[in-house]
Length: 514
Image (cartoon, rainbow, N blue to C red):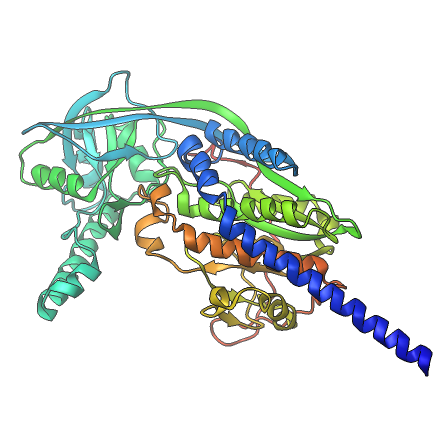
């Protein structure tokens, strides 16, 4: 009896010591990130120092090398793993000036992978695609574009976002504007449809007819924000103009005033370059062949500097690793972080990692991914894992209440089939979770736009995310056993059962058809 009592007391004492030690690590994580955060410096080096990270560009490779060096400076092992190749291109200057009927410098930039202007630029008239009866009429008009710049985007009837109209307009005026906008877009789309060319084929047809360049404008429904994607031309530049300047040129051309611009858009086609993922790790002590993973895509579009897509996810995960290396240098399980390449073209880097490391997938305890903007975590889904509520709930209970109190959860949820890199792992049966954040006007103002820059980062929110992720990684690492991988039958949008997402192979040689 006495021996049993002593054993029981010893067990309780051991458990108490473990809980106390655990709580101390968590307190240290909170203190370190609150008092010694390195987020601003990391963000400055990445966004301001290196800039945008378009797949295949020299800047992307520079970013990978910088990340490895940064991790090594913290005593963390890191490496770049090649997973494929991509068309290599480097952006140069873009100068756009209206020189007739009056003079004005225009706000715009070339699209990704755009060919260059002739050295020093070229001057030409700006024209719009006219009202035509059919494809034959378009083909008859086509030779007239030789030596001219052609506008191919719909003109906007208002440069004010809807929220601005809602605040100030009368209901009648707002409704009228929306009707006019719908009709304007319908008419323009019908005009383009009569050319017989799709959105990829139209720019190529125009350049083959001798156009000097293609002018577009992809307004993002926010003041000053345009989305910047890729060009489809092979020989002449494609540029995106601000809503305001595009509208100016369009109205002048439509009214027969023959505006002229001088466009000097320089870039370099560098052939084909290797593409990488950056992987860093803190080696586990008790279970080194089991893993807890952090995940964030490293690449970006290049209209801005990729600050909220996905610079904030990147610096968050780097900071989590720095904090854990300092305060939890000998984890039970190996802690990995993946900084994925070419997420923007189809989750290619993460899909390649899953495909190239099949032996690891069953040994990943949990993966935490962050992608969609600078805001604090607002939503967590169980991704279809039946028991995710139990273990995620326990881990999240250790995060300060002021961080988790407004987080919406969905358990067990449905598995994500795409959208960001966690989906690559979910398809392989890994408990992989998206730490989805508040949008901070993400989709209008920063997602793939020219405004996605350092100044849009909300560091208080990112700091909260670092604390949350660091604590959850720590808890997942310390978990006694591997968590359950039992999954539910997913439910489709129609309410009917559907299949678990299938694993998909990455594009390992891309961009060559641009």
